[in-house]
Image (spheres, rainbow, N blue to C red):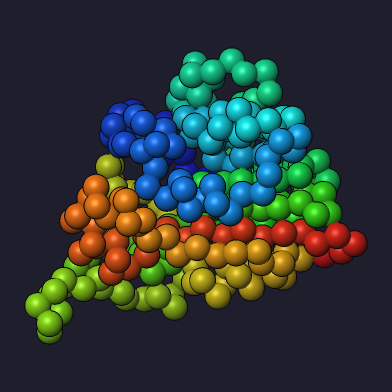
Length: 249
Protein backbone atom coordinates (compact mmCIF):
# COMPACT_ATOMS: atom_id res chain seq x y z
CA UNK A 1 0.00 0.00 0.00
CA UNK A 2 1.23 3.50 -0.78
CA UNK A 3 2.26 5.65 2.16
CA UNK A 4 -0.72 7.70 3.32
CA UNK A 5 1.27 10.63 4.65
CA UNK A 6 -1.40 13.19 3.77
CA UNK A 7 -3.72 11.86 6.47
CA UNK A 8 -1.09 12.48 9.13
CA UNK A 9 -2.56 15.46 11.06
CA UNK A 10 0.73 17.35 11.25
CA UNK A 11 1.51 16.81 7.58
CA UNK A 12 -2.00 17.75 6.50
CA UNK A 13 -1.88 20.96 8.53
CA UNK A 14 1.51 21.92 7.10
CA UNK A 15 0.60 21.08 3.51
CA UNK A 16 -2.71 22.95 3.82
CA UNK A 17 -0.76 26.17 4.40
CA UNK A 18 1.15 26.03 1.09
CA UNK A 19 0.10 28.57 -1.58
CA UNK A 20 -0.96 25.74 -3.95
CA UNK A 21 -3.24 24.43 -1.21
CA UNK A 22 -4.72 27.78 -0.17
CA UNK A 23 -4.93 29.42 -3.60
CA UNK A 24 -5.48 26.39 -5.82
CA UNK A 25 -4.23 26.53 -9.39
CA UNK A 26 -3.53 30.27 -9.07
CA UNK A 27 -0.97 29.40 -6.40
CA UNK A 28 0.59 26.53 -8.35
CA UNK A 29 3.79 27.73 -9.99
CA UNK A 30 3.86 25.12 -12.75
CA UNK A 31 0.13 25.26 -13.59
CA UNK A 32 0.45 27.30 -16.79
CA UNK A 33 3.05 24.88 -18.12
CA UNK A 34 0.87 21.91 -17.19
CA UNK A 35 -2.23 23.43 -18.76
CA UNK A 36 -0.34 24.11 -22.00
CA UNK A 37 0.21 20.36 -22.48
CA UNK A 38 -3.42 19.36 -21.94
CA UNK A 39 -5.58 18.44 -24.95
CA UNK A 40 -9.08 19.95 -25.35
CA UNK A 41 -11.18 18.88 -22.35
CA UNK A 42 -14.80 19.32 -23.46
CA UNK A 43 -16.71 16.05 -23.66
CA UNK A 44 -13.81 13.95 -22.36
CA UNK A 45 -13.98 11.20 -19.77
CA UNK A 46 -11.14 12.18 -17.46
CA UNK A 47 -9.40 10.37 -14.62
CA UNK A 48 -7.27 12.27 -12.12
CA UNK A 49 -4.79 10.22 -10.09
CA UNK A 50 -3.95 11.94 -6.81
CA UNK A 51 -6.61 14.65 -6.84
CA UNK A 52 -5.73 16.15 -3.44
CA UNK A 53 -7.96 19.13 -2.67
CA UNK A 54 -9.68 18.78 -6.04
CA UNK A 55 -8.46 22.01 -7.66
CA UNK A 56 -7.60 20.37 -10.98
CA UNK A 57 -10.72 18.20 -11.00
CA UNK A 58 -12.91 21.25 -10.60
CA UNK A 59 -11.08 23.04 -13.42
CA UNK A 60 -11.56 20.01 -15.68
CA UNK A 61 -15.28 19.94 -14.93
CA UNK A 62 -15.53 23.67 -15.61
CA UNK A 63 -13.81 23.10 -18.96
CA UNK A 64 -16.62 20.76 -19.97
CA UNK A 65 -15.35 17.29 -19.11
CA UNK A 66 -18.14 14.76 -19.47
CA UNK A 67 -16.99 13.05 -16.27
CA UNK A 68 -14.08 13.34 -13.88
CA UNK A 69 -13.15 10.34 -11.75
CA UNK A 70 -10.87 11.77 -9.07
CA UNK A 71 -8.85 9.33 -6.99
CA UNK A 72 -6.83 9.91 -3.84
CA UNK A 73 -5.66 7.82 -0.89
CA UNK A 74 -6.16 10.56 1.69
CA UNK A 75 -9.54 10.75 3.40
CA UNK A 76 -8.71 14.26 4.60
CA UNK A 77 -7.95 15.46 1.09
CA UNK A 78 -11.09 13.88 -0.33
CA UNK A 79 -13.26 15.37 2.41
CA UNK A 80 -11.89 18.83 1.63
CA UNK A 81 -12.40 18.31 -2.11
CA UNK A 82 -16.01 17.21 -1.65
CA UNK A 83 -16.70 20.15 0.65
CA UNK A 84 -15.37 22.60 -1.95
CA UNK A 85 -17.74 21.54 -4.71
CA UNK A 86 -20.81 19.41 -5.35
CA UNK A 87 -20.33 19.35 -9.13
CA UNK A 88 -22.19 16.31 -10.42
CA UNK A 89 -19.54 15.76 -13.10
CA UNK A 90 -16.90 14.93 -10.45
CA UNK A 91 -16.83 11.59 -8.64
CA UNK A 92 -14.30 11.59 -5.81
CA UNK A 93 -13.11 8.10 -4.88
CA UNK A 94 -10.63 6.75 -2.35
CA UNK A 95 -8.04 4.41 -3.85
CA UNK A 96 -4.50 3.16 -3.37
CA UNK A 97 -2.78 4.00 -6.64
CA UNK A 98 -0.29 1.19 -6.05
CA UNK A 99 -3.11 -1.28 -6.65
CA UNK A 100 -5.81 0.68 -8.51
CA UNK A 101 -7.04 -0.93 -11.72
CA UNK A 102 -9.21 1.12 -14.09
CA UNK A 103 -11.60 -0.39 -16.60
CA UNK A 104 -10.01 -0.95 -20.03
CA UNK A 105 -10.64 1.89 -22.49
CA UNK A 106 -12.75 3.78 -19.96
CA UNK A 107 -10.96 7.14 -20.18
CA UNK A 108 -10.09 9.68 -22.87
CA UNK A 109 -7.60 11.52 -20.66
CA UNK A 110 -5.66 10.68 -17.49
CA UNK A 111 -3.97 13.45 -15.52
CA UNK A 112 -1.81 13.37 -12.43
CA UNK A 113 -0.09 16.25 -10.66
CA UNK A 114 2.89 15.61 -8.37
CA UNK A 115 1.70 12.16 -7.37
CA UNK A 116 3.47 9.43 -9.36
CA UNK A 117 6.78 9.96 -7.56
CA UNK A 118 5.08 8.51 -4.47
CA UNK A 119 4.52 5.17 -6.25
CA UNK A 120 7.11 2.39 -6.12
CA UNK A 121 6.14 0.64 -9.37
CA UNK A 122 6.15 3.06 -12.29
CA UNK A 123 5.87 0.24 -14.82
CA UNK A 124 2.63 -1.05 -13.30
CA UNK A 125 0.91 2.32 -13.15
CA UNK A 126 1.88 3.34 -16.70
CA UNK A 127 0.80 0.00 -18.15
CA UNK A 128 -2.50 0.22 -16.27
CA UNK A 129 -3.10 3.77 -17.53
CA UNK A 130 -2.36 2.75 -21.13
CA UNK A 131 -4.94 -0.03 -20.86
CA UNK A 132 -7.49 2.35 -19.34
CA UNK A 133 -7.16 4.90 -22.14
CA UNK A 134 -9.01 4.63 -25.40
CA UNK A 135 -6.85 4.56 -28.54
CA UNK A 136 -6.12 8.20 -29.20
CA UNK A 137 -6.25 9.01 -25.48
CA UNK A 138 -3.72 11.07 -23.54
CA UNK A 139 -1.79 11.01 -20.29
CA UNK A 140 -0.45 14.26 -18.85
CA UNK A 141 1.41 14.17 -15.55
CA UNK A 142 3.89 16.07 -13.44
CA UNK A 143 6.45 14.79 -10.95
CA UNK A 144 9.34 16.26 -9.05
CA UNK A 145 12.11 16.54 -11.62
CA UNK A 146 14.61 13.68 -11.18
CA UNK A 147 17.48 16.16 -10.92
CA UNK A 148 15.70 17.71 -7.94
CA UNK A 149 14.53 14.39 -6.51
CA UNK A 150 17.81 12.46 -6.76
CA UNK A 151 18.82 13.54 -3.25
CA UNK A 152 16.55 12.92 -0.31
CA UNK A 153 17.52 16.32 1.09
CA UNK A 154 18.10 19.04 -1.55
CA UNK A 155 21.30 20.97 -0.91
CA UNK A 156 22.95 24.13 -2.25
CA UNK A 157 26.73 24.36 -2.30
CA UNK A 158 29.10 27.25 -3.12
CA UNK A 159 30.45 27.21 -6.68
CA UNK A 160 33.83 28.51 -7.81
CA UNK A 161 32.20 31.56 -9.44
CA UNK A 162 30.72 32.66 -6.13
CA UNK A 163 27.17 31.58 -6.88
CA UNK A 164 25.27 28.79 -5.16
CA UNK A 165 25.00 25.57 -7.14
CA UNK A 166 22.46 22.79 -6.72
CA UNK A 167 24.15 19.60 -5.52
CA UNK A 168 23.34 16.39 -7.36
CA UNK A 169 24.32 12.97 -6.03
CA UNK A 170 23.24 9.38 -6.71
CA UNK A 171 21.28 10.38 -9.79
CA UNK A 172 21.74 6.92 -11.35
CA UNK A 173 20.85 5.13 -8.11
CA UNK A 174 17.10 4.70 -8.44
CA UNK A 175 14.73 3.80 -5.65
CA UNK A 176 13.17 5.20 -2.49
CA UNK A 177 14.23 8.46 -0.93
CA UNK A 178 13.25 9.05 2.70
CA UNK A 179 13.03 12.74 3.47
CA UNK A 180 11.92 14.86 6.38
CA UNK A 181 9.49 17.25 4.66
CA UNK A 182 6.85 18.83 6.91
CA UNK A 183 7.07 15.63 9.00
CA UNK A 184 9.75 12.95 9.29
CA UNK A 185 9.82 9.89 7.10
CA UNK A 186 8.13 10.94 3.86
CA UNK A 187 8.99 8.37 1.17
CA UNK A 188 9.27 9.27 -2.51
CA UNK A 189 10.77 7.28 -5.39
CA UNK A 190 13.55 8.56 -7.59
CA UNK A 191 13.84 7.34 -11.17
CA UNK A 192 15.88 8.85 -13.97
CA UNK A 193 14.39 10.74 -16.86
CA UNK A 194 15.49 7.94 -19.19
CA UNK A 195 13.76 5.31 -17.07
CA UNK A 196 10.49 7.23 -17.09
CA UNK A 197 10.51 7.88 -20.83
CA UNK A 198 11.59 4.32 -21.71
CA UNK A 199 8.94 2.87 -19.40
CA UNK A 200 6.25 4.99 -21.05
CA UNK A 201 7.46 3.90 -24.49
CA UNK A 202 7.49 0.28 -23.36
CA UNK A 203 3.89 0.60 -22.21
CA UNK A 204 2.93 1.70 -25.74
CA UNK A 205 2.84 5.49 -25.40
CA UNK A 206 4.25 8.00 -27.83
CA UNK A 207 5.62 11.27 -26.50
CA UNK A 208 3.78 14.51 -27.33
CA UNK A 209 5.80 16.95 -25.24
CA UNK A 210 8.08 17.33 -22.24
CA UNK A 211 8.43 20.43 -20.09
CA UNK A 212 11.28 20.86 -17.60
CA UNK A 213 9.53 23.67 -15.80
CA UNK A 214 11.09 27.09 -15.47
CA UNK A 215 9.31 30.23 -14.27
CA UNK A 216 7.86 32.62 -16.81
CA UNK A 217 9.17 36.15 -17.16
CA UNK A 218 6.10 37.38 -15.30
CA UNK A 219 6.80 34.97 -12.44
CA UNK A 220 10.43 36.06 -12.29
CA UNK A 221 9.36 39.70 -12.19
CA UNK A 222 7.00 38.93 -9.30
CA UNK A 223 9.56 36.71 -7.53
CA UNK A 224 13.06 38.09 -8.29
CA UNK A 225 14.74 35.64 -5.89
CA UNK A 226 13.63 32.75 -8.11
CA UNK A 227 16.34 33.67 -10.62
CA UNK A 228 18.96 32.27 -8.24
CA UNK A 229 17.10 29.02 -7.66
CA UNK A 230 14.49 28.13 -10.25
CA UNK A 231 16.79 28.87 -13.20
CA UNK A 232 19.59 26.77 -11.70
CA UNK A 233 17.80 23.44 -11.60
CA UNK A 234 14.38 22.24 -12.79
CA UNK A 235 12.04 21.45 -9.91
CA UNK A 236 9.20 19.92 -11.92
CA UNK A 237 8.96 17.62 -14.92
CA UNK A 238 5.74 17.67 -16.95
CA UNK A 239 5.13 14.93 -19.51
CA UNK A 240 2.40 14.55 -22.13
CA UNK A 241 2.12 11.18 -23.88
CA UNK A 242 -0.43 9.66 -26.24
CA UNK A 243 -1.91 6.21 -26.80
CA UNK A 244 -1.78 5.89 -30.59
CA UNK A 245 -4.74 4.76 -32.63
CA UNK A 246 -4.67 1.14 -33.78
CA UNK A 247 -2.12 -0.11 -31.25
CA UNK A 248 -3.00 -2.24 -28.24
CA UNK A 249 0.56 -1.92 -26.88
